[in-house]
Length: 164
Image (cartoon, rainbow, N blue to C red; front, side):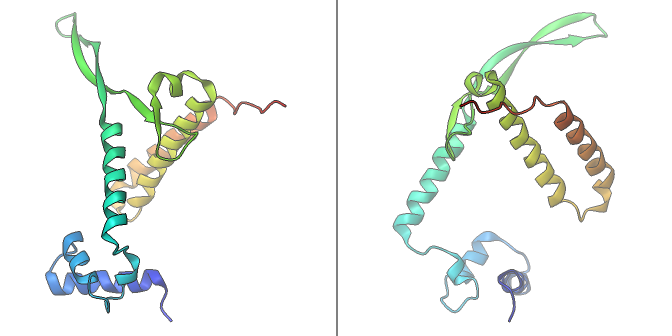
């Protein structure tokens, strides 16, 4: 009996064979057929799916909110500093509740939530490195990233001990 992953892999290959490309809209159209091997991987209840899509969109909107700060950019050739406006995220993920955000100064200003934020970003970076592990041309970059991550982890503040 094939695993779910093997079934999905075969379905994607079939989609490529039929359409010449693997595209989510084409794959979804195929999967709408109740006999498609991946049909049950989808929630076909339009009401719950629409709400879920709106929640995902709200998450993206909150994540995209930025405020502008002015930073100095040095121009060593002209020996001068020029102010440059940079967009900075106003909110960053909260570690107290899933898919929630808090003002950046509240998360990054406290040692434990700052440590958790950095650990989460390091995991994302490690995930990216794993996602391109089959691309040999990026091997040196992956190795450099792994070394930098190890260095950052070594220098991170230790977790705050619980009292009580």
